[in-house]
Length: 243
Length: 101
Image 1: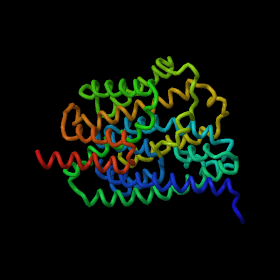
Image 2: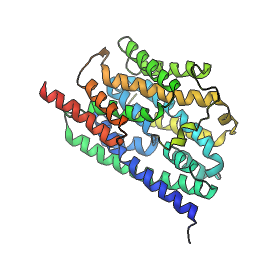
Image 3: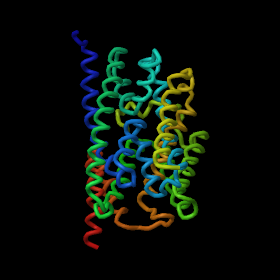
Image 4: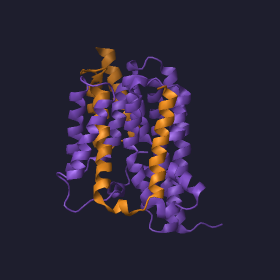
């Protein structure tokens, strides 16, 4: 069956974004093993959670607090996953439908599949963009995670290789594309200060959750926000994001 | 909780959030306030995670090789270098400082 021009364009975009993003999976795999998870647990996170920001948050908090910080790890991962729910609302008319297909679409609803899809001009292209990007990143992210986990397992003593600093840089790389306006920059600084001040006083993981309140307060009052109200998908127009 | 329980519970929570978006009426998306809070929530959590990952050692705040590594990462991000390059450069910076000090 010949593919239409719209579908071919969508698939090309999917390949470009998908292959670039899949490479991040190597850093996730290595950092997860460094955080104390074994190779199976690391691969399970990429297979079952499949949301890069949330995965990095879970292993970051487990690295500092261990399993006793389990509640904070789950809550931080889930709060970072809230935006995936907004993407899902945006994608529902495009790829929603019968139950089994919706379940797969839900699992693959991430920054990139939504971004590639919304960038396509026709409904046909949007469908192709979503499914191809989801498929390429799901396969690539999981293979890369396994490779990273095996490499991290071989490295042994990790602070010697600076992998703890790599984890901080990974979070910064996820944050960077979102700092394009005054309001998110102020929220980032406020959250950073809250986390730093509370770290000596509260158990590991809880300062991160407390910092999320800065977003709730600024978001509800729209302090320093634009007069024309933004939408959930505004940031996707730039085509940048995290898994 | 065991590590496996944490992995399963967190994965269920995130899948539920994704699936919920397909099942609720789409009117919520047109309301700016929940969308704004969700976007800023991502920013706040990532910023807090950077601080904890860079400055925390247990419950203490310490300044060590991770700080210059993060500055290098920020510089490379400003130059629009790819994610993987930034992460490796940060690790190399911290490793080099620890080797020399």
